[in-house]
Image (cartoon, rainbow, N blue to C red; front, side, top):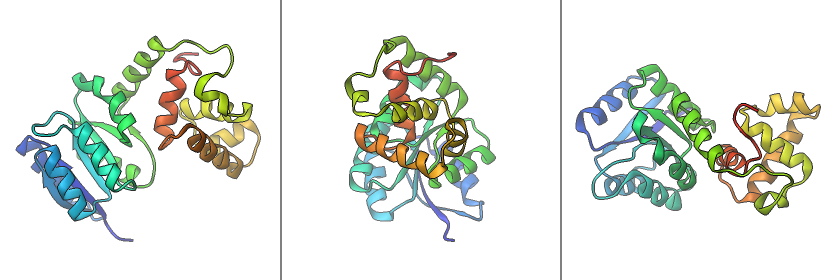
Length: 220
């Protein structure tokens, strides 16, 4: 199996080089490039074809959100993992909409950083606990609980709505299958149809929509 190709993007040289060194010693990860701003990131992503991009948010010339949009518009299969600090949670919602697959705090350990890259590459979502809790709390404050499916959710069947709710609660396909008493392949089919009907990129965006619409409320 070939190594995971990673592009590291951060305007702070010390952080950028530190991340590159920490990841570079991993036998299954190959740091193919570094970028100091969003425009450099877009150019290098097109030239180097990374599997995963570690993306800072606040950068000169072009910020990480717009860089993410441009990279994914050109190469939709690229996974973007956003590097954030505790006081930058306000960017998380917009980054998810831009197509980011996960969020990692900049003070994460080398082990957490490498695992996040692997998880993102395998199709999973990475959400730092503090980011997740604050994001979902913010979404739920702005949501209006649903008495019945409406708007975008009206396109879903009752079973698809139930699956969406369980996805938002963090269950895997296998766990949802057990919970609903159906085959795991059936759950995979439901998830695929949910993403297609709602025009979403992945499970992360699906979970956010569930909280936005009030389908799921934290603590309930």
